[in-house]
Length: 149
Image 1 (tube, helix red, strand yellow):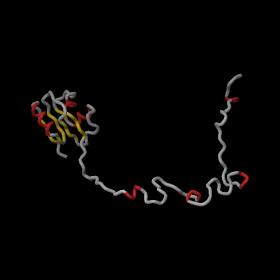
Image 2 (tube, rainbow, N blue to C red):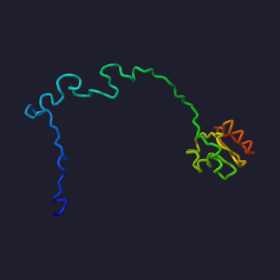
Image 3 (cartoon, rainbow, N blue to C red):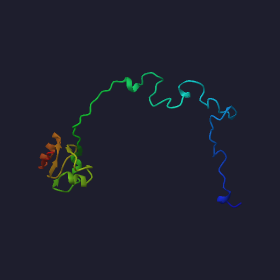
Image 4 (cartoon, rainbow, N blue to C red):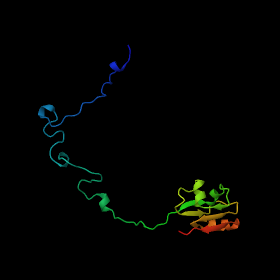
């Protein structure tokens, strides 16, 4: 037998008939239209919503609302000293850090942290330095320049 578009059939049970509601008692889905009788779920419109607890005050309204988000919080992009060893330049600034993929945005604040060691005496420009990083850069005869915003 040849198979083609003209003799393809969908498998049994693939096409299900839509349940027709409210078309009289002989349809089997008449009168209450499969909603039962009376109560919240039998009415039109929304019966339940996310977090509904049967009329009890929902948890989200019972728990205290605490916390504070500081509107002027400074968020730094962090770079470790061990990552700076990949860069073979004498001057390291946010543009170079972005070029090497160590930070995502050169316009945002950059902080240098002291994990690892730095081998070359380099000049590093950043917005902030940890005390540990500052000490290690000075031990390697390097210089730091703080960028003021």
